[in-house]
Image 1: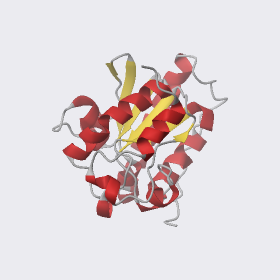
Image 2: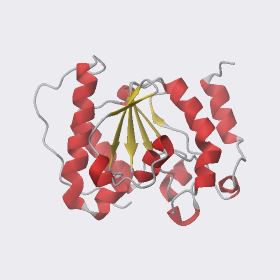
Image 3: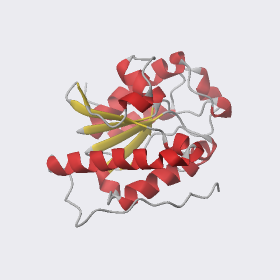
Image 4: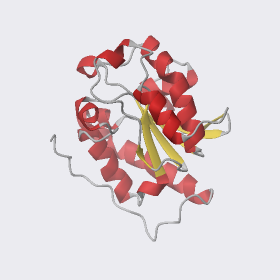
Length: 205
C-alpha cells in the first residue's frame, strides 16, 4: 500500500513504538526537500533539534550546513534525517532496540525521499544500515557501498568534527566526493571552480 508524505508524517508524530516517545518534545523527521537526490542520515536529535522539531539545527548541524553551502548544495538537493526521530535523553547514543523500533519509519522515509545517494553520518547510522558493529569510521569513510540500488557513503558525524577539528578536512573531502558523484550522475550541475573549505567554527547557540 502506497503511503503519502502527510500520512507518513502523521505516523511519525503519533509513534509510541519505544520509550523515547515519552520524553520527546517534538518528533524530528527531516530538513531539506521531501524528494531529493541525496539523503543524509545521522544518529538522533539533540536538545536544539528536539526544541525545533528539525534535524541538524544545533552546532553540529550548522557545521554540516556550512560545508554543504560551500560545496554549492541547495535545499532541493538534500534531505536530512536521523536513525531515530526522538531525542535520546542526555544526547546518548540510541539503543539497538530504539533504532530497531524506528527502522521501519526510516525505510518508508527513504522510499518517499527517493534518493540516489545516501550519506551515513557517523557509526550509529552505518551500523543500522550494514549490521556491522566492528568497523572503524576512519577505515570505511569516503568509499561508496552499493546496496539495494543506493550508493551509500559513510563519513564522520559533524559532532565528531566539532570535538576533533583537525579531521574537518576529511568530512569536507567526503562531501566533495558526494558532490562529484552527484555531478557524474546528472543530479547536480557542476561547480564553476573548486571551493575552499570553510574554517570557521559555528557558534554553540
